Amino acid sequence: MGVIPSRKSLALCDRLSVSSFCRRRLSTVLMRLKFAEHLKEAVTNIEQGHLRVGPEIVTDPSFLVTRNMEDFVTWVDTSKIKRKVLEYNEKLDDYDAMN
Image 1 (cartoon, rainbow, N blue to C red):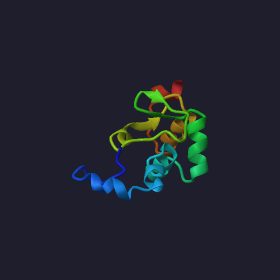
Image 2 (spheres, one colour; image 1 turned 30 degrees about the vertical axis):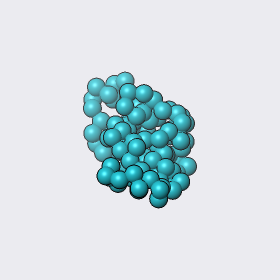
Image 3 (cartoon, rainbow, N blue to C red; image 1 turned 120 degrees about the vertical axis):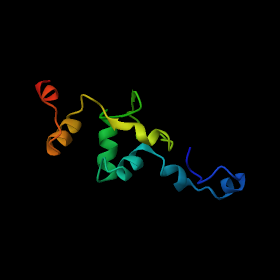
């Protein structure tokens, strides 16, 4: 899950706190990955279906993201937010602009 730093000892599980699990929530991970500036904005984007984790679209802001899954958090292909980000960064493909 990624809430403890190593697999060497189960004694680290005694010191787990609720905040360790809250840091693994999708809305918090989005802020850390710079997908959103504020938590409210991240929650709104998730609820509107603009983000996916791996192949599936996630609409639950409390979805727990493991460290391995963090690399697969992306925008949905049809998301207007993704389109605006690509336009701003001048990376929008001509083929995508036609759709």
